[in-house]
Length: 386
Image 1 (cartoon, helix red, strand yellow):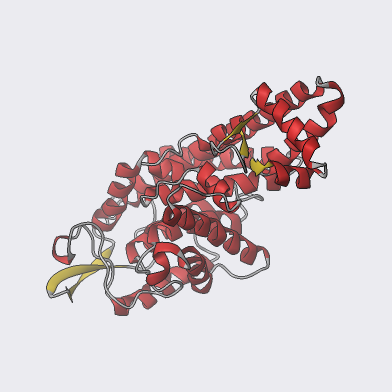
Image 2 (spheres, rainbow, N blue to C red):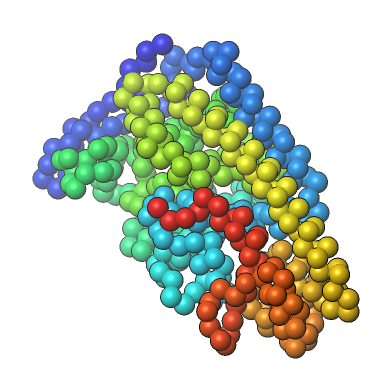
């Protein structure tokens, strides 16, 4: 089925150069999405994988433990797509006010991403609608400090932007002119609220493309657009715990990701994008289930190792529990969280260091910080800077 371009081109002058700015038509696509047997199977497999993830997280004794770390993993991955060089360990150190020697602007951006995601989820849980107002609030959290503070945080753009190229005239893509941003975003909001719209996965997939095409902010559009996927899936009840984030999949397949966004705009081939998106959801959900099982096995194995320590076993177990909740900490912080004396905590950390359960990550002789090594390693898989 051929739809042709999914929008119209408007002549616009930017910095003295004439460009063709693209204005997308409202969702849903017309004619409707074609669901071949193969595409239907991809959708069903993606939904089944989400169901498995929902089931395994429902069995967790403390789902918030995984939510805390998964949100931070997503923040690092999504920010890396935009070029930051921070790691998960950098972020966790930053949250301890221990981020010496790391790129501070980068880690601030990642920390802002955590705040933006947590703000959005909290608002949805409080019954606030998934709306343009919420999208602007999320953007404000994302851009409130660091390099983004100069790019109108929380406000739709009032000047033309472009994607790729060194100037407007040789840009890869030019989003809608300024006067079209508000109407386009109003159409997107109506689609998000349309109860007759397709299921949650289709809605998230199509809304993401539409948002990236509108590019309503001066900066931070990519991160906000990826946040929008997570918020839609949570809002639509696909998962009770928001533990499905596609940034690693997009990072690993970024050339294909950008190609498919462009293909939708030029030819209307939503079906190719949906196939890619459904495969990404299935892959990501399946890997998340595998990660949960690996972490549970790690926690159990390390707890059994500590159980053999005799009199110090109980203290070490309490410190291990504190590290499961926050996998990077100093000895004073661990002592406080485990409610033990500093000297007691220091001895237990020394034992865990000898066993290889924790490792020191600052290289300092004083004010040392320790990480639950294997835990951080599992979370960091795929999170190497580009």
